[in-house]
Each structure stands twice: as structure tokens, then as C-alpha cells.
Amino acid sequence: MEGFSYLIEEGFRGKLIVVGEGPEEKKLKKRAKDLGISDHVNFMGMVPHDKVAEYLRASQIYLSMSLSDGASTSLLEAMACGIYPIVSDIPANRKWIQDGDNSFLVPVRDAETLAQRIKEARSNTELRRRGVVKNLKIVKERGNFLKNMAVLEKLYKEVLRENRG
Image 1 (cartoon, rainbow, N blue to C red):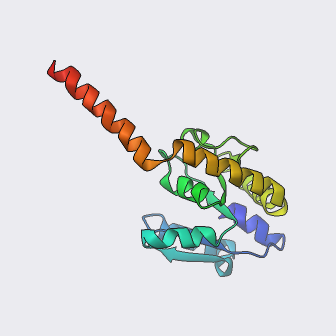
Image 2: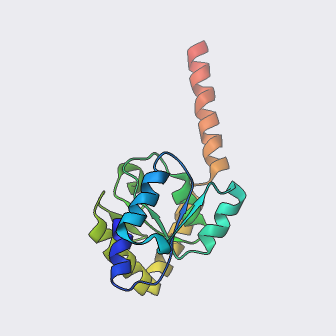
């Protein structure tokens, strides 16, 4: 919220769309109010999975400032939908994002850098276009669910054979 509030203070005209619900939702709403940006933040609550792509495609930038995460399905969905992601610099995101190449990694809890990266991405159409092209390629090569499940199934079968024999 803080990074977005810096942008609003500088005259940024846009909306922050927060999709999902959970234990942090109440805190986030209070934080938006305390920062004076409630009018610029839409909390959508839980969105049916088949509607998520619509929200993504209506956006230019996907943000996720998770403190920790595994392989983020929502990051891969954003990449597959052609949205430029800006995400926290945590190990799981580093597997998908090369900072400054296909997107931006932002140090955890660094609101000023987040605001700078958002401004940079918004003002540089060519940067976003290159990132989107690279991200689509990455997702096709490494993020294919069915392909990954086939590899996992093969590994499970190998483990079962080893344990039986």
C-alpha cells in the first residue's frame, strides 16, 4: 500500500485492484484508509477462478509483494495473460523473474523502490512489451501444468518402483 500511496501523492492516476480475501484483508483496508488512498484501491474479494484472467487482462501491471511464497500460480497466470509483473525479491519469484530483463524484483518491504519500478514500467511501453514476450515464452516452456504433472507422475512411478524392488 505504501508504494502505491507514493504514486498517488505524485499525482498518479490509476487504480490498485486487490483480488482475493484472507486474514490480511481487514488490515489492508485499514492501511489504505490510513494512507488516504481508499478511493484509489478496489478490494474485489474472492473472485471466481474463471474471472481472474479478465481482471488480469484489464491491467497493465501485476503486483505481488509477498514476504514468502512457493511457486506463485497467480504470477504465472499474470505472465500467461501478458501482464508485466513487479514482484517481491524472494526465492520463489527469482525462479521466474530476471530483474530488469523480463520484469522487476523489488526488495521486500521497500515501498520507495516499488513506486519507482511501477513508474518505470508504466512510462516505458517497450520495456513492458519485451518483458511480456519473454514471460509468455517462459510460461510456455516451464509453466505448462499438464507437462509438469506428467514429469511429476513419472517421478512418483520411479519412486514406487524403487520402494517395491
